[in-house]
Image: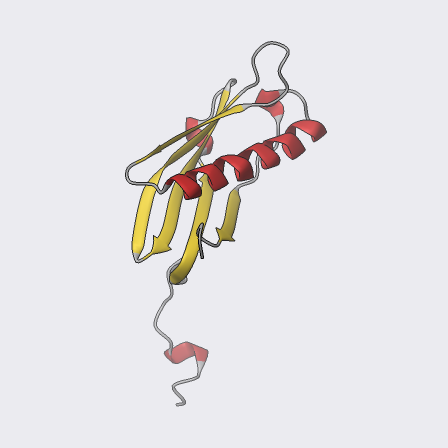
Amino acid sequence: MSPLDPKNRAPQDALALPAVTENGGRVELRFAATRTTQTSCVYSARWFAGPCKIEGTVTIFAPVGSTKIPSVGIEAESLPEWLGTFTVQLVKSTARSVLADQPDFAQAAWPRRLTRWRRADGT
């Protein structure tokens, strides 16, 4: 049998291993439905910057009062400022699109996964 035969391949994980990010940084957000409430939406987060992998959470809080823009909270240790700022911008633009389709925060259809790459400041 050929080693290229699919029957001879080792089983693969359900999720592919992340690509190595040598320049810049990458953010990967996965919707955490069990941690989402009427007033907040939670994502499990992984950031990749060079050889570093940083894990944490990103929370989108429902807009309060007359403001239409949700606030964003990030919990992660040693996250470079530029990558945190990029993550907030990504989440806010996504939230604007989601809430434009469904203004009721609790009923909004949040994306299950967001992944973006950005080059580092000064490169």
